[in-house]
Length: 209
Image (cartoon, rainbow, N blue to C red; front, top):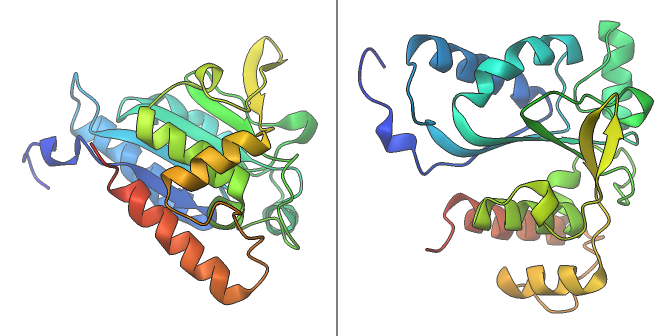
């Protein structure tokens, strides 16, 4: 990038999943250090099912915040892939919740454990209606958790996080906004899941004005 301004990225949303959080957080940390700017380089940064050491994430969080208008961390206590990763790496992952959920100042932690996250519980960001609906409203309006439907404030050590409990009405409204069938199919078929995920994220990446 050299010294070239990063203004072209100002309207971008960045979404990472699983191990993809490692290069994204490293890149954002480097951008914050090498290209300091009074304005954020991107709009929303969403880190889902983050397979990154929770301690490392806490160290990077302050710098990452400088690169975006808002940073959101989606976590679940039902993510079996992250449980396996923790066993291998010997350290808790940032995308896990439970009693040791990662809550960092300036990062909105959303606990999606109440959502039916499927067999492995690791792909909820692109398959589960509740998570997709909350992400849609986050990217569309840029509102903090306290102003989005279905998020209930909780505190851990004096710091806030938000469990997700979306109502059926909110889900229907999100489906309508995404131009999906009003019944919002259960997406149990693999092909349906793929189409649904691509449909949603094509709209997330390029939100309407």
